Image (cartoon, rainbow, N blue to C red; front, side):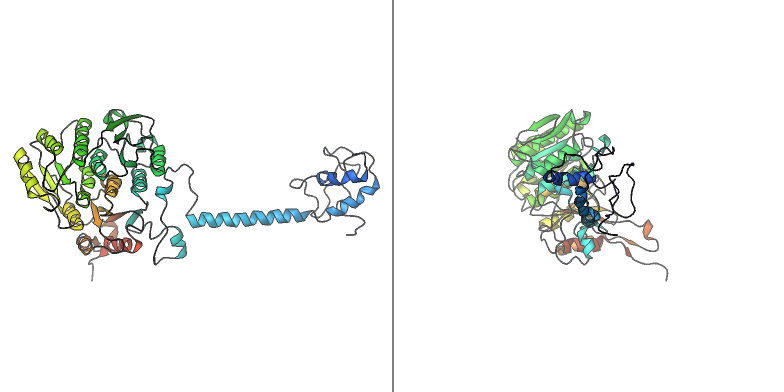
Length: 476
């Protein structure tokens, strides 16, 4: 095509505009010619007549000297090509991000940071794509991690796992808020997770609730109910309770006094006394932690004792329930025989459930059965919750998992990297198996609580292996 007649030379003709052949005529996506020609018209001293017109009307007599401007239109596809390349590049970036994160995130998920899978650490043994999706650090075939960096994040994530809150029927009527430094209040408050109250424990503070807690409350939206006596939240101590409904507050104090107040509240809400009472060590929280899971599952209240003394608040509650059996959790180094005798003197039947260390103590409660008390998990086909013994508030955070889903006891590990030998032995004892039909077998599942600083991916992988269904026989 000659330079004397550019490809768009026919635009300002007398007839209605026609689309010439070639790539120059694309009026749907390209600005009209006059929008680009207008800035250059002024130096030429023209009268302001617009070539082609904005409305498509016939132009006034157009002076020939305007032809040089059209030479700039010889490659009108160049800006469009650049724009197209930019859009394509953006598209590839978006696809990469979506593919790497496992799919688009909902804006109003309510989980925020607590629900984010932790980055895989160590040798995961998986592909690069699997690591991007959070495997195996987030989940394996038989384990699921709640990977928050602190109890507030873990409690928020657990509450949303148990109460997805996508409709009114999936929301709790109330929550219980405990201070971030109050592990004893959290363990005792776990009893309120049992039916009929079903209030998960969340972590707050005196000044302002942690961001994870506030976000979880926005999603959970507790509104109160008859079972909670209209309360949307039970606040233990002067903690921030960012809910729109009624807040029932309990005074904070020493572990024994605080637990007794929660036990009395439990009696009022449940409308009856407890079937059993658990007495735990106030001075050694790692021995008391497993009580939170049992309290959430059973509704049995948790009281506290010193190593050599039964506090007045605990004794007063026991006197109100003299016919209720008491189960002391922990060895005599945590709760002495002197305390046991004091309880017997009140009139309660007393039995001890214990292990020599926190790991063994948790296993002892998982195995224990006395009538209707105890998990009695000595065979396959159960859920378990695994947490670090050095993080006692984590027991309260995880407690709702023991009262829903696979309803499992809390087990403890004392090391980030290695599964304790006694816990490994217990998992082997309850390892599921099948003979000829794996779809008809029983299965185990382990919830792992905390990030990889608490329990690393190698220990999670070992727990997965021990929970895996194994073939134990068959034909031939």
